[in-house]
Length: 115
Length: 113
Image (tube, rainbow over all chains, first blue to last red; front, side):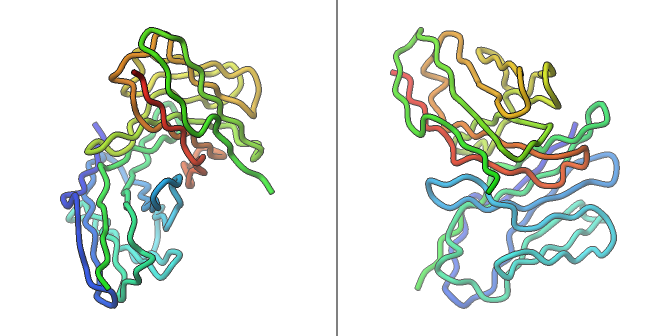
């Protein structure tokens, strides 16, 4: 069965520091992979997605993610974190069912940013 | 601009009552989804629909039902609300078969007392 694991429930970084959020997936075929961000009291916003091709994907707000098939990982990175990046981040894998796709989400990583 | 709206934003109901949460999208997306979000579980899929008159059960569908009579709406009904259904509910929609990113509503916070 398809699954997504985000090993870190909470992460705290200082403003200006680099960030890496981990995501591991379980999927039999080439996965569709996504990162979403949720600000407090808001819905989820798509940061970036990987379907195929270049394994380093650029997203919005200065985020990037790298697909590593050998490690079944899709880690999210940002070189310099801003206080406004404090939010919850969800990794998701697209799972095919009857020719259609639905998303399976990880449990999320809550990011806190210290000034 | 196209959007996806959920109503109400907040609701308190009593155990045993029937509750319906509304989801309306103007993206003309075929695919619509209901998730619940609980601490430590992330988002779990309740029901989904790939078009009018199509509905499917997700991983946590017990106690919930949906119907899809048009493209725009996918209401979620709790047949007999239970305290375990206290949660934040998100509706999402997407176009096509690639799963190319969902558009999410702002959520409904439901409390069952």
